[in-house]
Length: 455
Image (cartoon, rainbow, N blue to C red; front, side, top):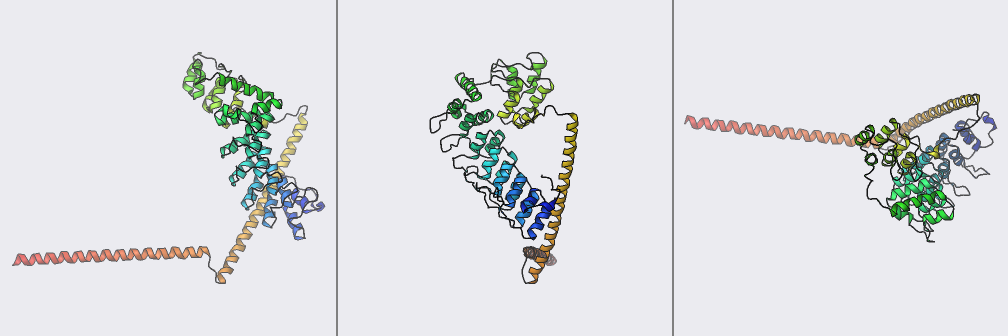
């Protein structure tokens, strides 16, 4: 969250207040005549665009409550929802969706917030948009779905989320390209591997041709993507030498592949196989367990000291294999989400600088917490005030002869209760009458029998 301005009196426009998440001065400036839809000269942003650009959630709430127009677009056709998707502020996207703002609006290139979140790799924002009911089949001006967009930009996590929500990996764009074509052309190897494995038939994915007759291999060769060419060559070699099942000459690998920890432990502990033994494809026991998601086997191998940095013939470590098969628990166990999310190390920084950074980060976090607590307090006060006003409005409505839904519901419940009571009383009366009649009949029968005996 952006830091508050040191001198709010220097705000030149309503956008300055929003950029600094200063909802109090935002409210004051609107009361003094500033428009909630004022357009900034440079970027053509409204205050709501600006709030979504900096992640000022409280300002987003306040602006929507006070009539800000969420359909205003920039020259590129971006609404505030597009801006929030680009910046990855899923809380702002959720606030817009909760206020009924459409997340299906297209910009000048025909892209929706779903496309933009996929392009920028914001998986949390992507999930928020999908939960709001976004259309996965929506295409942009090039015929790209959000899966195409994620594949082109190398966003593996976004591809996994989109396919989990029902996205189609074999859709074609205006040029006949599948997402695999785009991943190959851009050299996005992890994305291509996942698309191949998700389909289950590598030949179908890698032999698909676009409108120019090009396969993913042709595009990789055209754009000099050697990593893609090596991978496709390896896959084609496997197709030319098919194996219907795991090679039985590697029983430990078969046990690891099937998740049979007891058999694997027996083989390793008895010295039958080495814990880092490779099969004919260069894969270790860890590769097999990681690809199938056998977290218990992988945990045991790590505890036994197995080397997790060994690469197979495709150049993959066990973590790479786990990522390719979307085994996220194994990825986490093996050291995070991969190189895309790895933090860069700053070389040459002194310990004093590190301490200063830590102190600065601590102050920033405390300041953010205080700002968030203040925002939460203001939201609670607003909620209490609205509850009070709602009660007053309800009393005024009833006084003018209106009928509230809760009152009508209460009356229905009372009528149902009275009806139930009446039914119960009727049943009791009927039972009593039946009992009396039975008693009278029994007594009469007894009297008649006594009279016949006396005669």
